[in-house]
Length: 89
Image (cartoon, rainbow, N blue to C red; front, side, top):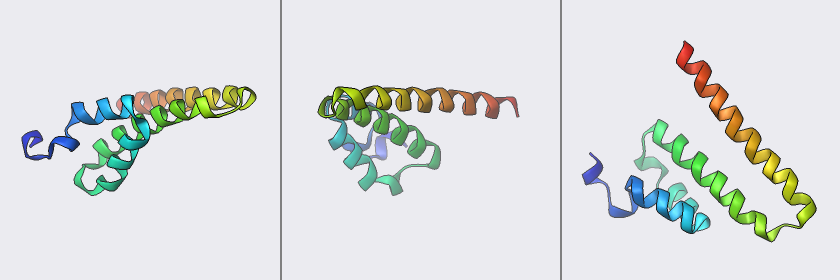
């Protein structure tokens, strides 16, 4: 099924574009959400949102930057905890 997707929706390309240019990767993901399964949507959007937030940090003042880093860390830890509890069920 991976081969039937267009080149811009393949896993490796999406991760690459989200790392190199997060806003463009985020736009590509949001405009093509209907083409992904539910679990893929969550994984791609989580990764893209975190990368975009980190990319946007360079445009924020230094005193706000710390709060955003704390928010990103809280999201990553929360995601890990939720996945851990889902596996126990």
